[in-house]
Length: 258
Ligand code: NAD
Ligand code: 0WE
Image 1 (cartoon, helix red, strand yellow):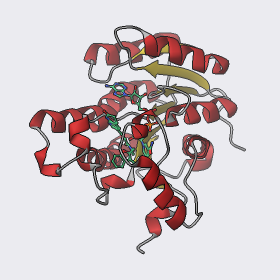
Image 2 (cartoon, rainbow, N blue to C red):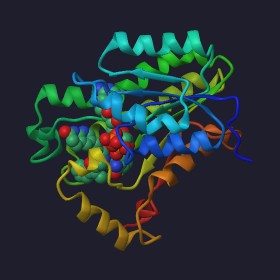
Image 3 (cartoon, rainbow, N blue to C red):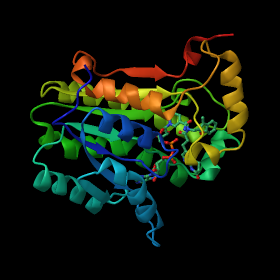
Image 4 (cartoon, helix red, strand yellow):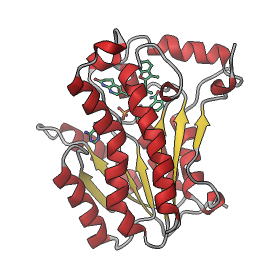
């Protein structure tokens, strides 16, 4: 039923084996997709080595450095896809960044620079990647991004990332409208809290996970594989009628008021 054979999928945001993007890459691979993987380069090349070893079993046919703050790298990524693949079917946007200062303390204390960086990396990057992907998706396609409840409700300390996620979710709707005429669908997955590199760097994440385990209808949180399965569904022909949506994969937490 869920079949992605013959589809070219670019997955961004894999840092290690806890990354949500890693859960997504595994499910896309299991459904038969041909994978391309980007990683955030660092000076010592540590991420490059780690991520390339991790993804090896999925045999990605492209493995490229891509810092979304680097316009040249971004263009090179999509130029390479054009050369090597000719077309792109699936784009997974699974990255975010805000400075530590922008993720704690009084929200109003955020600096202009930290506020702009959070929005640039976490929200604008979906716009720039979608723009670059658009000509490669002439036969249609599917774009999926990752968001969090802190973009629509106040979650203490999520602060500036919440503003970035609100912008990201509105980007999903405007991009869905623009790209719908060429049969490109754009959706977001709002995941419940999961222990990853990014979330573990946040104080109190374990307490938040325990809270969800008590309150959510399913009395647990979600896994990277569950988010991955939802992403595979959204990218598949099972979801051809769905665009512009934010789908909650959060064990039901979002419906609760008390
Ligand atoms: P993660 O640390 O595994 O992934 C974050 C990724 O962002 C890393 O791979 C990192 O390299 C990448 N990144 C940061 N700055 C970048 C840049 N300038 N250019 C390119 N890549 C950059 O953590 P994760 O929790 O898997 O996060 C993935 C996505 O899921 C994020 O958008 C996050 O907001 C979202 N999300 C996470 C949770 C959670 O609880 N973990 C819940 C809901 C949504
Ligand atoms: O989107 C996120 C986290 C994204 C993130 C995490 C970090 C930590 C390290 C972005 N930038 C940074 N910058 C760093 O320097 N989540 C949904 C996970 C998360 O983060 C929270 C949460 C949850 C859940 C922050 C406060 C409260 C809850």
